[in-house]
Length: 441
Image (cartoon, rainbow, N blue to C red):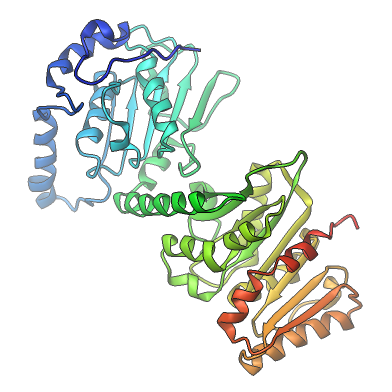
């Protein structure tokens, strides 16, 4: 382990105060730092480069202003840190290799810029702490950053980093993540070109909303789950981020997984709008209200839910989160989410211990006998459209006729479609009922 030294306050820095590996470059910046920790004079080369991008290059080429990236090694690694510090709103992502981000600079300025840091822990030229220390600061801020340590690598981290295709545990090439919002794509160039400046704006709003939810919630911790790029290619219309809630106080052993599918209104919402809505009248709000020892996952989609995409998603989730009890997986939804639940269990009933498809006009295609052993609870508003009420009733009757003795039906008196949605996603009784079943029963 490399010790993290105590650094002086801004305004009292001298070259001698810096670790040896930082002194070479530190001397060039000490005179440029004011008492607030800001750089007094911008680097002329950087400003000239940005001006060139904004003028001649933009005129000559079709440059996407939301996809401007910066990377560098050694002095260029320090320059990369400096570039995003001076202009955090200009860059879609950054890759500093064997660089330094000085301790008197405010890491909050760069916390929303996607950053992938590389450094060899045997670097004799630029001390490893030049990268590890800023990453620890970013980690405390839950920043959008990741850091790959290259064990026994000297000052040639760029040879590995700029060709990186994934961790190698045997060699000691390990990547750490500052937060759950980091894109975990492991191919360096795939990761880089997935990042956009517009995504930064969206992610910044998401994290602000997420913080407010977690400050308000007492029983669960909410996090964002971003699908890796290679996985996203196979997820159809599923959006890049899902929401997950885990208990604040987790008991020992594996936890059940409840998957909630949202309605059609979420298709055209931004992820931030969906996050806010989920905390109020969807899955996240239900997880907080139920106060159960379980994991809740809410995927988001821009189109009707597709069972094939959902199965690929579930395979990834089970491989990534080994604490999930595979015998206690449940799915529920209302409206479009109810139909998604129904179509999914028709194709993959063996994956679930119980299900609750609600508030939709059921299609009766499929083999009802395949659902004869799956506990199912259908709910609908008594003031919903007649075809919706008939659909849920018909679904329940058809499953019963197939021999299912563990099927229930609830009709909320005088509840329209929206009121029924609120009733479904505030039903602790429903959660208790589902959690009472296991595939081994």
